[in-house]
Length: 87
Image (cartoon, rainbow, N blue to C red; front, side):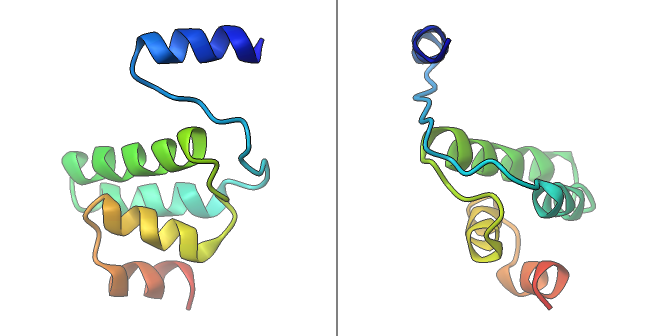
């Protein structure tokens, strides 16, 4: 199954990695909701950063610092994210 998914992803420009940690995605969804408050474009940007980091780079979606970094990549303000997610 992974081989097939890898081939399909490659044809779409997605380089799947299967090294990600599978666990609670609650905080990632909270981050997406924070971005949504800034508008659809911001939400899309943050979602793309999260998905690329998780599915292609093997990121740890349960790590608050990792989530903050992805949010910054998606154009959210780091200080606002930290207050929302970590404090």
